[in-house]
Length: 113
Length: 357
Image (tube, rainbow over all chains, first blue to last red; front, side):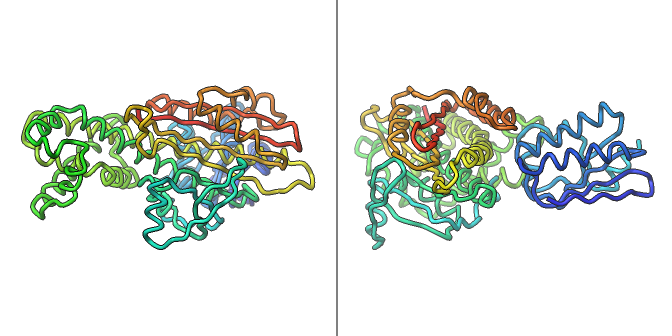
């Protein structure tokens, strides 16, 4: 799994997750979220465009991100959730629970709202 | 995950044939051989590799295959294949269950009673009626096509109303079409014959309900794939250093052919077991026998998972809960248990499903 982060002009931070998120690297994702949550001024966008697979550890990491954002008061939104990752999120009834947007731009607008 | 239908499975897969399957393959000049399974038995079947998931599904749905054995060397790199295999087998079994249920619904219907009275030489369930149903005229085939379209629309409308008003997506629509193709020929024949009568419409409605429920049961296959990925990953972590790294998944299907001992009421069952580690496979054999008898010497998955020393053990139950819920909602009974072997770290986990009652 590869993690890349960048700051948008609006101040939101975009964390791009590429590859596969599973038992062996879900903790790396959580650590990255913790680090970026502290640095984000307006909010955090998690771009899943290049994420090809997620297991239950990865789902747990996404849920961790969501609950962490609530406790930190930093808005968060997931972007570009598609394919098998979207299917797993749908099967686990999280599609209407996690904040999800169709693109990074619309996710950035949501975290600033 | 209907989109996996055309995925290719590369790993060599052992398929054990039913009696019907044996006849089918031998008539086509396919040579069957004896293969050793992880439960210690040797049975006749064939070997496939680099095949489409669709092909395996069709073989199972037509009652030709009763066991599938699949080697797993590395769950992480074989994720898609494992999920594709399990969802494909589940969907095939689902189609078989639907066909059995539709046959029983037909046999109990007023349409069948009226037909049997009028045609004592070609009663429902007879070879004569089966032959007649399969040799319908072009006009009857047209009628059947139109009726199928209406039935498909009805099923999708039912799913939409149960799905909070959301229209079924393309994958669901494709699944509906596939399920309709697996309805018995005699059912289609009699639906066409009785389409304008109140009794025919009653049978039509019953059939639509069966197909809609089968669509809802399809999610069981999705959860099954997710659960087994987690289990196989856990099995891999229990391997002793230096032990044979290959695990095996054995899927045992029953109820695909009419069971005379059950008074003609076949119960479709799927039992999946995975084994890691060497040693005797006697535990697996006992496990299969126990499941068939409705009892099991092992602990439930929930108890096992809570006792397992896995860092994400609480997540291991995550998909299992969804699987149990999906089974409960759609009338499929479900049993799970796990058993550890004393020798060489052997571990057996199994899930048993039963439907079609």
